[in-house]
Length: 292
Image 1 (cartoon, one colour):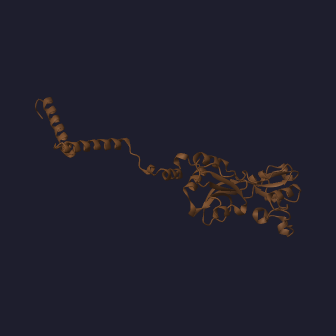
Image 2 (cartoon, helix red, strand yellow; image 1 turned 180 degrees about the horizontal axis):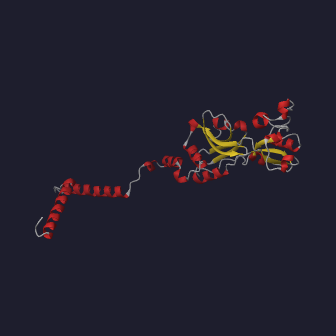
């Protein structure tokens, strides 16, 4: 099972469809869903685990808005954001020689029986003795990872998988150790590119670490809720100018109603400039004894 169980939709505003998140086994999404609940309390969440075959299918068929997957996946028609890598480990019985060391290589495991399809671990496949000699046995009775780990505990073989999955399926009679020369797996967030919505953009921003104040989707949602919020804010200088202009227009309108001819605003400005110039000239004459 995954780090989180399937959860019903959280409390939200009636009439608003919950935002749905699928996640591959072993992926922990709590830190992101917690932030979502803080930023979008009106939009509930529906979070559920999916098997590998459904991690992309869940967004293609509309079951989920976004999905946390393990790469590689078919990325046709998807937007993909790589998030982090996971170390691959080998699970062995507790009394296996590998349990006595901190890490192993595929060469150390060349003579083991892999309880998975060899193509899933090409590094091991290329050095495996049972592959080279044609003596590999068929896999029997393995319907899930729990079945595989149970056979590991019984000494039938080994499995190589992401550490998060090994941790979920850990038992007292098995241990796991990093395999240093097996490529790490990568966890990514995917969604259908042509179906990107403001809510998906909001969640992508959360996953990428964008702050609430810089969220583009949050602003878009606020605009939908309050169309007037789209109006540009007016600064204090612009407000003062607008107020003075309105007062002047009101004064001119009152003068017209009273039959008083009032000079235009431009004339007032010119007269003021002329008066200022005359005052300056008079001040110079006083200072220099009437001489310019």
